[in-house]
Length: 79
Image (cartoon, rainbow, N blue to C red; front, side):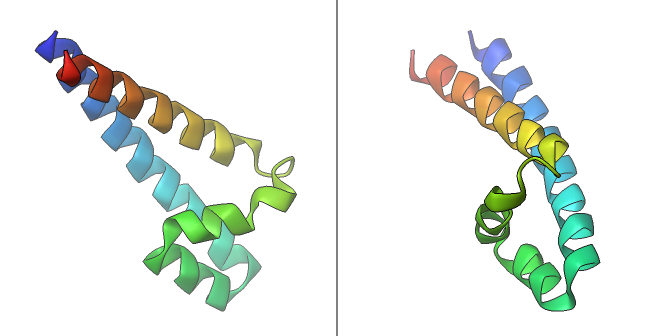
């Protein structure tokens, strides 16, 4: 099952990079300080956007997809 884990990990990395770029764009559009927080601490910036999740649904969908693929990769490598 190592190939499945590798492919899941690649998908997770691609989705995470896309999520980070999209998070930077959203945060810098709100304010420079918020953008710097997103640049240095992306999980904190994502948590700060939770009250506005309806406006940024795609952002949270990407985060959920990346988390799902990471979980699949971890489960496949532990077997």
